[in-house]
Each structure stands twice: as structure tokens, then as C-alpha cells.
Figure (cartoon, rainbow, N blue to C red):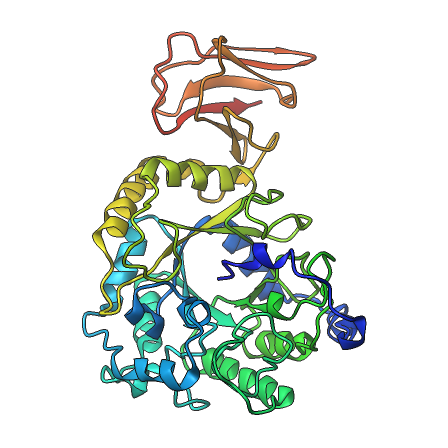
Length: 452
């Protein structure tokens, strides 16, 4: 993930003479028509609502996050020694997938290759891969088989940028400047490499539900201009066409922090809800495509031995609910340890989230955001003729919540437990929901509104 994009916004603009247009990619993709299988996959993705992100690889050995190679300016010749130390002997694909499933997650997005170029599968395109470690096994194969067995969808995160390879155009990239590369880059070679790796991912591991790209921002032509202008031609037209040809249902997302381009099937938001920009990664327009927001359980994506700033289950459940109210999925990250085990701070919180989803998931799975965007008190999800009002906070000095946007006729209002009716009043100016006598839940009080 791009943890330092916000600081890059302050960098001076570069000469336009260096820019290469993305018009070639966009002109061909403008004719993209999603297949019936792809459209069905988009709808299913929106129904799933909750997924697990897994940041993991050789970088975990250093216990300082997935950006450690860049942050410490570790040279390739030094960093390559991690292949001798990365030995995830406690990796258990069945346990990883079961943990996600018990948490109520419907899919897993796994780092197949991050910015340090380390491949978590038995790629034939590079020796810098997990099957050349002492562990020697293809973890992606194990994870894919277990996902298919347990009924969990598998998405593959794939980094566009590279701090390790010399053919990547590192000369114009913003990151990876201190990794000791001196050989002249070869962009066409790098594009061929990516195509070959993506072909492996989509032909050797069964059904892949999506490809999640990251790193476009490394070659942005202008950090201020919210367009796809880049110093390189990413050949998106060819790459996206390849993916959809190999697996038509496979969804494509690109974490470029910009509006989607044709060929992309859902829009990703990093550490922010759609339409928000508290991190510097947001601010892009919200599209009509399916939406997803991703977040960490502490402050780190990859394993960080000193990061103790763990978010509470309450905080994360409310984030999940807010995402659903914004009509978005919630992709929640874990960063397993270098031995392949997942620390208890993650698993304990996920178990609590799973217990909540087991009880209240009906108001989340298959729902769509409704009525209005979330307010300070909470927000709405909807399934068919039922509106679910999620209340996080009682309005100050009031025993009611007024929703001016709610004009649909309500037949009945009850707490989600079905045992207590909730008083309401509908006027031309909006709807009043009365909370008198209702003991609010500390996490989320859900009122079911049955529409006429």
C-alpha cells in the first residue's frame, strides 16, 4: 500500500516534456463492454460486503512494515538476502481461510507481489520468489485450494511498481530511489514480465475473483492533477484485456487514487470512506461502479513488531457498517508474522467481529446504502422493502432522530431483535424516529423500518 502518497503531494511538478499520455490505454478501453459473467460478479461482489486483506511476504522478516526496503534505502544486493531467512514454517492456509470465514468475511485479497517484487507463488518469471526460500512451497497454491474448498473468493493484489527489478522505469519513479539500481531500465521488458506473471496467476490457480492493482501513483505526471496522466504508458488496454480474456468474470480494480477508467470493475478507496479525504489518498470522484474501502487493524499493512496501536472491535464494526451505508465493501487487513502465524491481537478482534456479523449480518450482506449518506448518529442500509437504521450515537439533547430525506412510507418500526416497537412520525418535511425508552447498544442499535 502507498503509505507516503500524502507527503508526495507537496513535491514540485515535473516538466511536461517527460510525460507520456495514457490516451492509448483509455481509447481502446473505451470500447470495453463487461461480459454477463463479469456483471454478475460485480453484483455478487457488492453483496459480499466484507473481505480480508493480507499483506505478507519476505519483508515481514524485518518486522517494520511492507515499505521497509524503500524507507531504509536497502539496496537490492542487501535485500535479496531475505530469501535465506524467510521461512514461514507455521503457514497454515486452512487456518487463514477459516479465520476469515469465522469473521464473516466472504473473500480474501492476498498480496501476490508487493513493491519489493517478491512473488508469493512459484512464478517462472523470477527467481525472487517463495519457492526459492527454505520453505520452498507455493503459498498461493495452498491458499487458492483452501479458498475454493471453504467457499471463500480469492482476489490477487499485484504491484505495478517495483523497487527490485532494473527493467522497471525507476529513473522517473518517485519511490525506490535508494535501492542501488544503476542499469538502464527497459520498460517493454517490464510490461512483458507483468503480463507473463498475470497469465500465471489466472491460469494456474483456478478461479480468481479479481486483480487488485497498486502503484500507479509512483509514476504520476502531476501530483495535483487528478487525472491518469503518467510518465509511462502502463499498457492498461493490453493488461485489462488479457485479464478479462483469461477469466471473463475476474474483476479489476486499480488503487490509483483517481476516478476509474474503462476496463476497471470496482473502485477502491484507501483508508477512507468513499468521498472522504482524511489521508491524502482520497478526493477522487465516486463512480457508479461497485465500491470498496480498505483499512488496517493497527497502523501497519505489513507486519510491524512495534505497532501496538490496535483498533477496537467496536471501531472496526462501525467502520464496516459505515462502509455498507456508503454502499461500499470493507476490506480489512492483517499482516501475518514471518513464520506464517497471525498474531492474537488480530484473531481475537476478528472473532468478535464474526460474532457480531453472525447476529446482525442480515443488515449488511446483500444490502445497499440507502436514504442518505451517514450522519453523526449513523446511517442506513436497505434490502428489499426493509430499511435498517444503524444508530451509533444518540443526538445531543434529543430523544429523536430527524431524517428529512426519508420520505418513503413506513408501515412498522421495530428494534432488530423484533421484540420492541419503535415510535415514529412522518411529516412532509421528513421522518422522526423516537428513541424514548430505548437502551442504545454500545456498538450499533439497529432499527428495522418495514416499508409499505
